[in-house]
Image 1 (cartoon, rainbow, N blue to C red):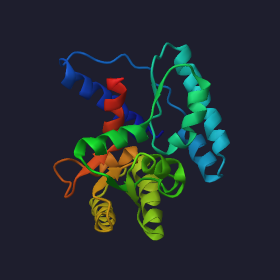
Image 2: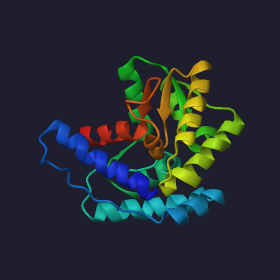
Image 3: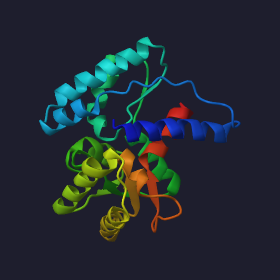
Image 4: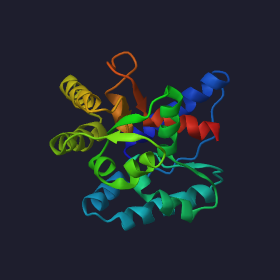
Length: 217
């Protein structure tokens, strides 16, 4: 939902399309960029019916504009996945299913689930994965608070520091020692901290997985 998230999705949709065809092919895209400030205020108030209305309205605009398949460009807002599905007649590709497929492709069954507090604490994400046979490991409460602050106070504002990157790596490693074999970057902005060349453990970037699923549809 942040502009950083929108930027990442847009870039990956084009980059991965070029990898599959040729450098000049670009996917036809419609983007409805909502007011993230409104979303954050509703999240903080616990008004998930309100966020659902915002996303449903957005989905209807996209369908009316000619979209034939839809993706919610945020892990947290999959809490309103069914609201979006119910609002349109076109298919909606689920990032949680994309994560499960990526785990299966790696031959893995356990995931360190790292994201916003809503993703880690509410059951809309973990229960979906567990229902598909995935063992989910999350950090302790104080580290969830740290990740929440990293996302909202830094990454969604375009701030990336080496200190934050190292702390993120420590939290991820802690989850791995407790059984989460694959680190799940289940927040779009975590890709700002973790790259193939610097990751000390196997991981799945939810945004990459989601984009691949959208392009495969």
